Length: 341
Image (cartoon, one colour):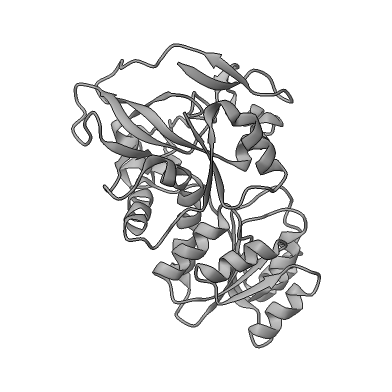
């Protein structure tokens, strides 16, 4: 089968011919890929940022946002059958450790992460397990929802935390309305009562945010922090949901937060530099977010089937992986780029 592989860091990806994965265990599931999301993390992988953490052996197949059709199943698989449309939770988990038994499979003690530390979905087929596949509603197609497997799941995971710590009428500032942000905005609109203020450098992204549920849209032009403070009556927002996490976004985001507010970090790339006395005196909280649980993904798929969360996507043939990554890196992708074998 064809697969797009990392052959070396700071090098271009290569389209290789490799063996199709096979069933080797009773809970294995082979999925024929219908769509694989192109994520900024993939760019970070090529830059070598994940090399030490993942310890993956090169070459390997990249791609961690995947959906498709079940092609084969192990002898003990009962939750899906050959031909079913599925989306894949990004982690392959054990189901036996303390975290898994608590429903916190994001922190499984022995998980694999296809596309990060083992072969992923920039390919025609991918091997996963029964614990990682979520059946799709008949109204949904794999290429339409593939990026919800990680980008959408991460956005849902963080937005659900915002919904849990806010009340109707509270303010939430969303920094970044791009690939993850435009999903988080829709989730917040569907499950919370917050008043959303969206900040982005791109006027088109702000316009999209207003179309999909934001109450206020502000272009980041140097006056945006002041505008947010004014909109919130001089107090700042109860929550800031930061999908950028670099380029000065964190210092600006903290300045938009009210006392006892919650700062939810999704995007990454810079350090948060806040004097500890400011954290203590204002009792603000910093909360990290990494993907979400299997149940989170099931809930997100329910919102997608109800039409409350829709991905804005641009599709590329698998063979044009280089163009997709270049477009993402240059900021030319509105929403999410999807590779389709």
